[in-house]
Length: 348
Image (cartoon, rainbow, N blue to C red; front, side):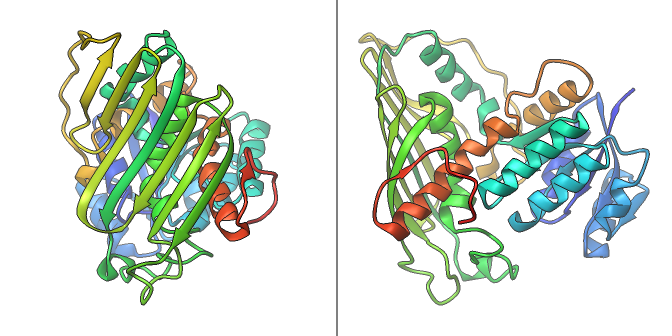
């Protein structure tokens, strides 16, 4: 029997989840929820869904929903995830997981108590190129890891920020370019280089100060448990629509990867040569090109986990790391000193 999904939040990212679920034979979309009935109704007609509501509690009460995709504004993630877990629903949550460590703790505890899956949507971990790089690093082909960097340069101007009241606010978005756009590349950096012990950062609003209160430009320095060092550089105030790069340097190998779409190695060398890599399957993008093409892969893995297959590889305990890194950078920027990771469960 298919795993039956409900989507909470039918705005920008909700349709991407709907499209991805439609491509997974073991998943079925059965219910939709959005505060704007017309938005949910349009998605329902597109995917032949009968159950539509503007009350997420009503969706959670439905017996024909086994799991939910939480695709709402950032500040609602924790509240909705905890409620879903308590209702016995498996939870697939968009990034960022939540806006403070205490809420992430509550999400993890609620899922554990209810015996349900809690997965975080960092879909780029399923990109074939990043998986190849991860395999090379974990099997030792890069030798000792030395340095990694996450670079995100994009433009998100007044039209974007004015499209919804929660955007560009500390209380509801939780930050700016770091927590919204750069968090995917930061997660990839942590996935490849391992646990970070501390972060030192700075942030500024250099271009969009008339329409946002959060940062549009930021930088950070990381120290990792394995001794490697890391860098983060991000801006949503550039002249580039979308440009992301992930750099990894080891004693025996180096790589530069474009983490946008198409994802690709722009440089790869291991022990002085370019290694042969297995072919990767082609797949279309879903939604914006910057989303890549791995939402389907991520949701397929989550569906399999719900159905009793292999554990989903990005549970709450793992998915929280990138959010904590971003929140730690914010703390460091405000305090003017390094901040240890992981963060204590105190509100930021």
